Length: 69
Image 1 (cartoon, rainbow, N blue to C red):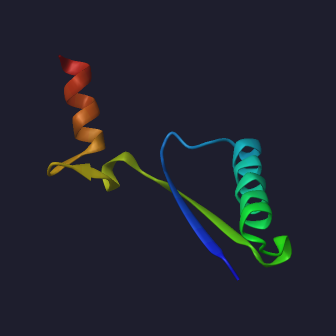
Image 2 (image 1 turned 90 degrees about the vertical axis):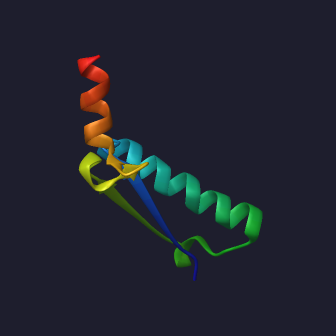
């Protein structure tokens, strides 16, 4: 049973976009890798900008700095 965990930085996709993403990933695994669609699990997590960091700084801080320049 394939389990796919997708983490997206906010701003997140809307409900319809997430549903389409789940359908697309399921179709890919089914078609390309011969996995049963009924057995494919797709989970989507929305991650806050302050929970993601690059070079020791949160994305929130990086965006704030860019907006002040």
